[in-house]
Length: 308
Image 1 (spheres, helix red, strand yellow):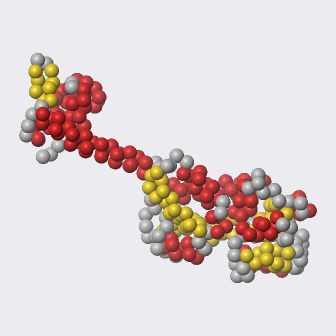
Image 2: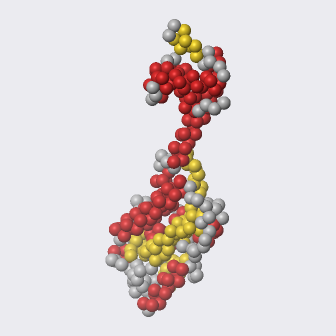
């Protein structure tokens, strides 16, 4: 047999309306075209679907039985159409995101929350890992998107790099909280919360102090910035950290009023990257979220700079 979905759909409309003319209006075709389509379908099936009795169109028993199968097929097709539309509009599917610690606590969940609005059938997996682990997860295609400190380029990973200015976090009641900018001179010999010695930001910050001729006093060594915010709020130290941590602080100001964010000079920056698999095609959803994340990073830079 060689009949089409259009023929099946038209047959169902004729059965529902009991009229060739009404079915023609429903499917948007002429009455002769619908009559021809039904006749062709009957020829393919090898039996009659309708008989005409005194101008009335009467379905045969075979037509009623055939309709049950047609309904099953058309319901499945309609379900496929709904699924395809949801995939096209990023409302269904799966998205796997790996995020480094500085962004995993507040920044990435906030961006995902915005992206997921109206996408009830989109499943998301979000994990926090160190940047080097994220790089390997993306290279091996275990995750769709990674957000991490910028790695060295490699063929198995595509990357979009962003240079983000670092900021200084101080207690809100500290005299430096109102400074136009904070310099190594302001922090000469003051207790600092820093990341581990070999972290690029620690190396750059210490170099800035040495070049200016002021003491860089490392009091608290951390693996991530989050604990440092609490130490600063308690007045135990100051902290020069990445923009994302500072921005997260800004977003929490409604509940966290113990901290102030100020510019630091000379300018120190960190580089973060959006990572995607180099040897795989990005899904429509992954591509859409990548675009959304890029826009969020740009908005973060603008909003934070305007608030300093």
